[in-house]
Image 1 (cartoon, rainbow, N blue to C red):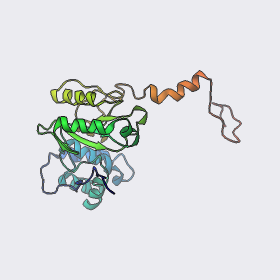
Image 2 (cartoon, rainbow, N blue to C red):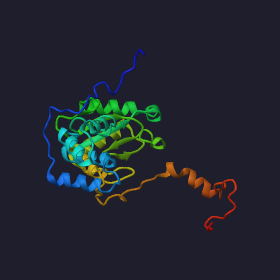
Image 3 (cartoon, rainbow, N blue to C red):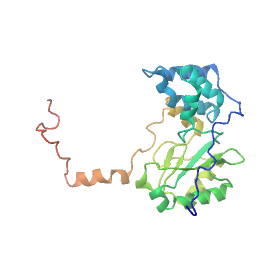
Image 4 (cartoon, rainbow, N blue to C red):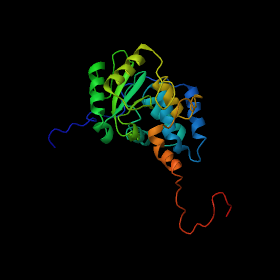
Length: 244
């Protein structure tokens, strides 16, 4: 197909040559704590890998081995999951992970221009990290926020209705250490701290900032203004709130 360029040409596997790790006995204990939340320990693999990333900044060989041992599965099974989902990183991520959506509606609304502007401004390509370790920039697939297209994420927090210039301002503020607040979410901390939250260890900021905005709630507002309600299911003669 002439002119097609994949964003995932060099995705590769886990870098087993890099054996550095920050995993401690405390980390292992926390993986066991995660596993105890599930009827089957192997079900804890996804949050356990996020915990590994919060410690090592990527999925490390040591993290794979620890997850396999604690969860009672093989290292190959852990590696298979870690290399399937793009949220799991095979090389070190910078202090902040900036993801730009260029899928469908975001692309139509300018996502490609935002990504290109940031690549030129930061001097990095897709899935690369700035020399100072501050920003890892990545093209990402749909963020399920089409009503706010084009969308950018910083450490998995939403930045809506982005423009190239605003995107540059956000990354410059991150690099400078200025306070940056997501449009629908919390004040930005760091990618590793966000990964710890995804592992199931809350940071107490879940209710910081709005989770929904006018674009998402437009249908609800129109329904309320017109006193519209959803039709009852066929054969359901019970009024709302009545016990059956």
